[in-house]
Image 1 (cartoon, rainbow, N blue to C red):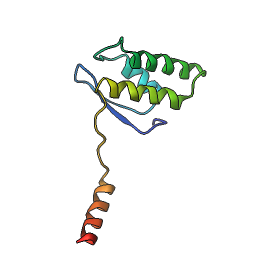
Image 2: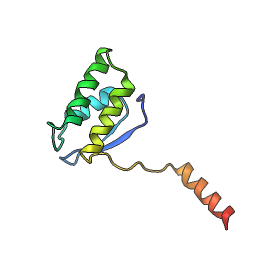
Image 3: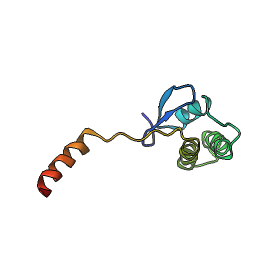
Image 4: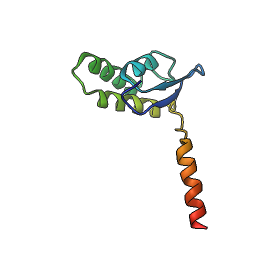
Length: 96
């Protein structure tokens, strides 16, 4: 189980991953990305390594990973939970 809300990532080779930890982010960064030379990607790699070493906040490193995934259009839209769907249905009936 991860420390962060899970992110769905789809790499260039079509491999999908759910990332919710620093170790998961590190594994995802080792996959196929469109541009491993891009500044957000390099920042994410540096900050993930620093978080593993204890010199960076894991939250900051994970945010950098998310920013890199967004920058390279790898972040997939989050799926709504079944509970939220049920709540939407209830509120829709109340508004009618």
